[in-house]
Amino acid sequence: MFYSKNFFDSDAWTGVALSKTRFRYRAVAVGGTFDILHIGHEKLLAKAFELGELVFVGVTGDRLVSKLSKDHPVRTFAVRRRNLRQLLKAYGWLERARITELKDSFGPAIRRRRLEAVVVSEETRENGLRLNQLRRNRGLKPLRLYVVRMVRADDGKVVSDSRIRRGEVNPRGRLKKRVRTRIR
View (cartoon, rainbow, N blue to C red):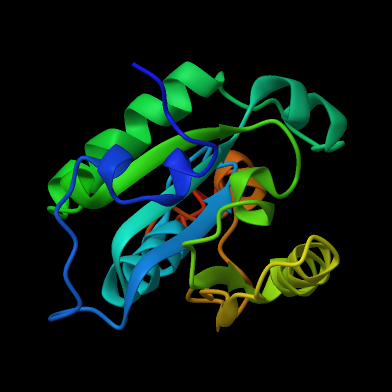
């Protein structure tokens, strides 16, 4: 079958019958590494699925992760995608999600004409602004930018994969209890 140049900008390829009745936007983008899924990821995804009937979820690919200078190891793309799919299914969002591997910082969001909004965290707001500049340079409309506040743990510090790995907090942002031992 032959597809026109704009096939990926049509609704035919999404597999979802889209309507504008329940959602503010037909197509929204969100992205991240999604290594240890935590309450911050849930809040980011919840905003994207609140806004968009169809949500393109970009997951950082393994090659891109290696370029990010993370201070800790990151699970493989396959494991992160599987865990993300389980989370999306638990919230009833999986059927409205299109998970894609990010090979660069912006993925398909710099070229998809039908995207209308992008959801970012406070930490990645600058990437959202840069994305819109790249879209303008390509003759595309900029996306409506939604910035989600970082989730803070019980101690007021941001919940992050790094803090979870160090054992400071759990994925819900609760402080881990330290066991104190007394030396006699």
